[in-house]
Image 1: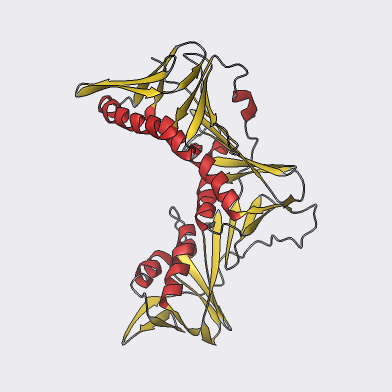
Image 2: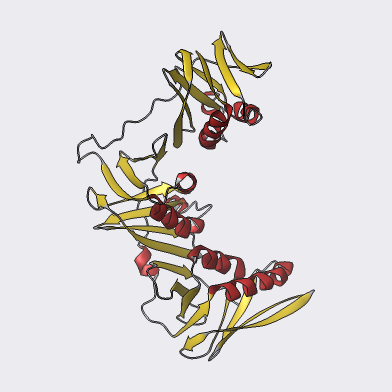
Length: 372
């Protein structure tokens, strides 16, 4: 293999695929980046057998070929090669890297043992592949509004370590539950092969979101044999799906509301941040909400001080006292992205619901109170 490429292009390509490298593996192959050189193109790929990222850049290829290089070492090395014309040449078990008047070399190995890519595309028969198409910006917003609520660790229900994606009619719904919160967001789609649902591991879906930056671009998500593929043009991401039955999240939603308030998000979020400074001194992260006719009072105390902050609201229903983990509550407010939200309370020891106030947003958050 011998080729020439732009250093900035190489840096960006390596930065993309390195996210898929295995972090807990004893396999040198899963710690490597595969490079395939073909006329006009250099393709880089990495996988941990759960997620696979493949991307291509333009290259002047003198000799086609494939090699494996140590992934993180190659990533760190190439970060220093911006604004350079790079020459890569495989000689025996070494990859020669030439730039400006300098050169280096890294160990490389045969690429034959690298896992083959799964074939998932729209040319497969409809009984084998499912898909939906929507705007890239809408898909990223859906992911951002729910992925934060994925369970970080749940031995009893490992399925909660992923985001549920449900396609029904002309809508896609994203749901995440971590035992304390539930996040749900609904977005319109342009087309689908029919109704279906999958659970995408949180690591994979968060990496997908980072690649979605085209506001007008349309993205198609393909699903086949417990695997998902999303083709972003020069970059393709493939992920294993989580297998199991996702809990019926609709059963978590209360059927009746006792008190509701409309509140500006920024003042409430800022107040919760100040309350968190005191509550974390007691390792409780708890803040008390006292809902009155036109005000929410936030109170928090520790050995180093106390806080009693009043925030104007529009209230409908009786007064209510309740406590929440201020960190969890604030994460919900930030994810909402709204200037105003409606908070619906069922009772002092029951979960509350947070929804958008007017507009076209379609999300629902549920958060459990702290028992005091």
